[in-house]
Amino acid sequence: HGRKGETAMGLFGKMFEKKICSICGGEIGLLGNRKLEDGSLCKECARKLSPYFSDRRRSTVEEIREQLEWREANKERVAAFHVTRTLGLDTKVLLDEDAGRFLVTSSSRWRDANPDVLDFSQVTGCDTETRETRSEIRWEDKEGVEHSYEPPRYDVDYDVYVTIHVNVPYYDTIAFRVNDSRIEERSSVEFREAERQAQDIRAALTELRETERGKAAAAAAPKTARTCPFCGATTIPDANGRCEYCGGAMGA
Image 1: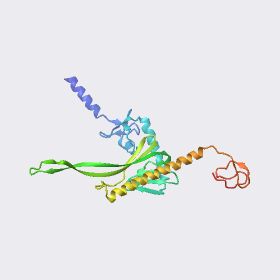
Image 2: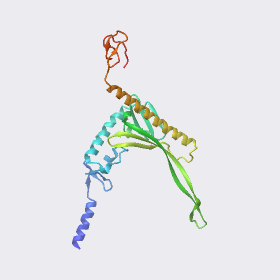
Image 3: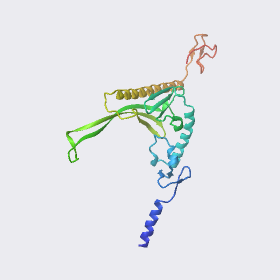
Image 4: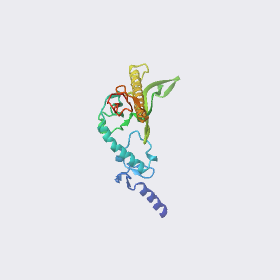
């Protein structure tokens, strides 16, 4: 009996022993431990991870440390971000077309929230989807017992979602609901507006991704010699598209 008691006490003690965060070294409270593959993570450090990251339990301490460094560096990208276009309703897609970057946020104070700033070239695709939520409508008899109608009746609500597929080391999708509240009628103005916003986001990100990739391909393409229309020299235009001999504008 004594050994059993000692074993039980040992297990009990192990359950409630203090844990240390493998990242910051701080003591983790009773319900604050976030398990990693080879360590522990406190709530404070977990909050600094990307909101789109969902593979914590299978991540090593080193992988989490790398992501937190990436998130810290992201603060500089947020500070340099200049909004040129805003898309969406409650959750917004903000574009910085001059820098070729975007972010997704539902916060009015988005700079304080440190949202991930990504390049247009990191977008690999964009999908839109309408999701239905069906709730059965039941009737109640005199005794207060609920019954199904024959045939069953349902109340159907609609949500419009956008999923942005991205090439990021820590996640591959950013999914969010476009409408700010459930839509009751598919024929409503609210549904049409949510659908329009979703299509605008998809079209913008797809177009900007293609533009950025086209620029990258053009920059990587080997330069060929051409005849300058101004002086007749055969030359490769410089970085500004000008003839190296007469300075005439030859184009890219």
